Amino acid sequence: MEKEQKQAIKELAELLHENNLSEIDYESNGVHIRIVGPKTAHSDVAPVVSAGVPTVAVANPMPVVSEPKPIVKVENDIVSPMVGIVYLTKTPNDPPFVKVGDMVSVGDTVCLIEAMKTFNPIKATKAGRISAVLVESGNPVEFNQPLFTLE
Image (cartoon, rainbow, N blue to C red; front, side, top):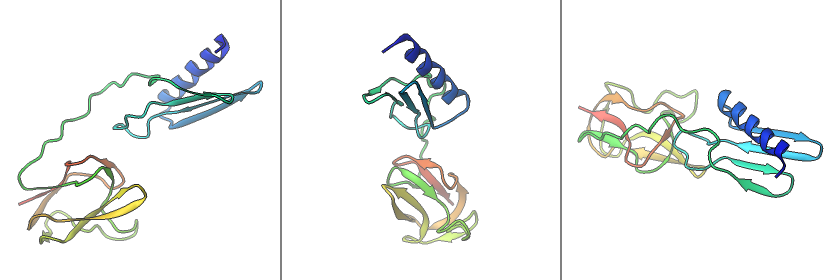
């Protein structure tokens, strides 16, 4: 790889990080450079850099500054059975499945988790009153991450 290409990759990686971008494409003099950053803060995928025809995977160009927060599970929590994106409503215009103060029974749908382009209904595993909603719609969730707290 030429010195100019290495410098271009470095500058593009800095732009990606500084502007919180997910991807940058750059082409000059027949050389195409594409840098793809991590999709989420929990992603273990390193950004991909391609120059011309061959693709070269490089380590994350910018160091991760914060450690992931530990998942603290409480006995009365309804937890995620999978990794994915949580949705608190069926569609953007619908009301949430549950909100603080609602009573739920075992088997009631409390949210959806999208995994591999499939929306999976998440059912209450315990009965009780929702005392806290611990996630935001559209955010990633991890396996066994608390979603709701019951009283």
